[in-house]
Image (cartoon, rainbow, N blue to C red; front, top):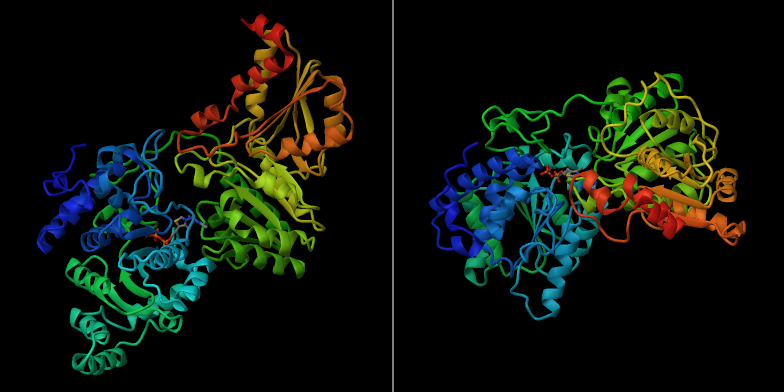
Length: 639
Ligand SMILES: Cc1ncc(C[n+]2csc(CCOP(=O)(O)OP(=O)(O)O)c2C)c(N)n1
């Protein structure tokens, strides 16, 4: 695909290069930036729709403010591709989301123009407020802090906690609400309805209205005259009350694609002496300026590589069913037999495949918005009433609901079922999205039933198992994407015996105990070890809690080496096994125990296969771990 013609953009390496551009030139720059963004994502894939929605905002903010001295914080950071292009990273933009390339989100280590790293939503107002307060304390109050947050991200509690705090402080913080009336899916909840009402009840703010509103901050007679105009304007233009009640100076709505409006409004916000936080309500369109994105249901939120002319995305060749589809189908099968089963997700209906469940049971499926904390306690509340909630939340996002898991669910022994999607390393989204910690953070909670599925068929059975666990909280973890296609997935899962693993292959020297989806790698490793005359037992633990202690002890007693392996951090499954072995006295008898976990580092974006190479959790690493454990002779035999 030909690169777009971008004569003005070619002159802008960093924002300072466009400081002398006229308004017309900035408009042309925005058009070129949009074309460059589309062209880039067509070859890298990624978050296109959100980025296209903020092209004019990106240009206007950088043209008005003195970044990086002024701090610009993008909430989630998935819309930052245009920002990256004009902040010194255009030469690497086509490496986006690939190994060794630019991150798909803002990242402090990548650029001084990214003052705050993100990927999980709704952190920008808190971070921006912290920076604004720090600027005041450091005597640098002339430095501006601007947080850009989407309407979807506004549904999280953190955003309100931050606004509540900001409204009570005098620091100047500019929050730009990027309201495109979309989350990944259409936004849900009262806040989204409120924003829609606000927009529909009033026209876009004209520059005159805006000047009148701002003028009240100027001293003297102008102030009095202006105040009247402002009151008039306010009377005419109701709305924004919620933000004003929270202590924000609300401005808007403005057309977030109209630079003739955005530029003077931002200049006025920049120059205003008003104390405290501002909220600029900008109305934007997700996917703006690219017809296939504008007309698609999800506005091209996240796309594969695509053909720019047709918008057609690259399709993966048909493969085994994804864990997500199997999860949803399995839950539907259970729900058909049990009307107490309900499903909860936090703004990820398509990512979790719960949209399939919602189609079938619209009254029993709840998308609560980006609100993981609430999702967990909401599910806990339903569980107290005898409902059977399945909460499908990515492992990484459940981190946000941790106290709710501990205090509201586990401590009360409530049978909430957690479907922990995106367990393990997730590829292009990188470290922020990796499901690394859930085994450790759930494994320490008394009374939880914890499972990891080795393949999609096992997931099917584990969902059926969880449907029957009415006296304890339970969780199953499973990876992103396709399963293994080892066998057709049954129409309905078969419940498993709680706390029982299985032995797939019996051997005598080395035991490999897998927890989760590394099992196939373990079997490959066992094949390889067998060729060296080293006999292996391979077992699938299935449960981390309750641990199959009988199986663990048997493996420990009858093998020289015991390896555990999991797609999780230190102190997870291997830690639980080690604890048991130590207390059972089985580490005192010469057993060579080797827990294989994710390493104690954050692993950047890459293909999952390469990430697992970096993590040293593929078959050759299992082989090597076994050989090293056995010592010199085994290593020599291999050589
Ligand atoms: C805590 C958390 N939960 C879920 C997500 C997944 N997620 C990424 S972007 C997004 C939608 C954000 O919507 P909005 O803020 O309106 O931005 P837009 O994409 O519409 O520009 C969601 C749910 C996330 N990043 N963080």
